[in-house]
Image 1 (cartoon, helix red, strand yellow):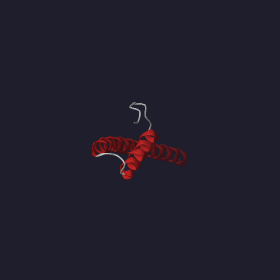
Image 2 (cartoon, rainbow, N blue to C red):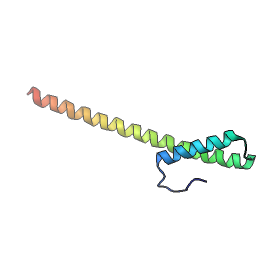
Image 3 (tube, rainbow, N blue to C red):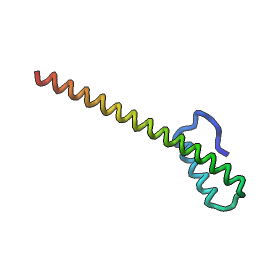
Image 4 (cartoon, one colour):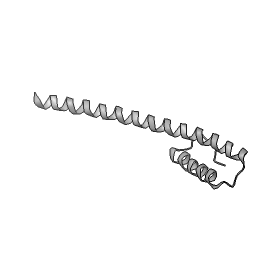
Length: 79
């Protein structure tokens, strides 16, 4: 089973999702274990999606700041 730590990285979670997918595809596990793994996968998927959305937001903010700085520099050089 995957480690249950708040220190898990995005990559750790993605790797665990791949493991879960492979286990569910293998058909070698029972229904109860399948349900448990599916639930874990849903949580990991939500966590990964949230991480990606936050990263996208951060990149958008940084691009906006860079544009502001560039515009300010252009204004200074035009004077």
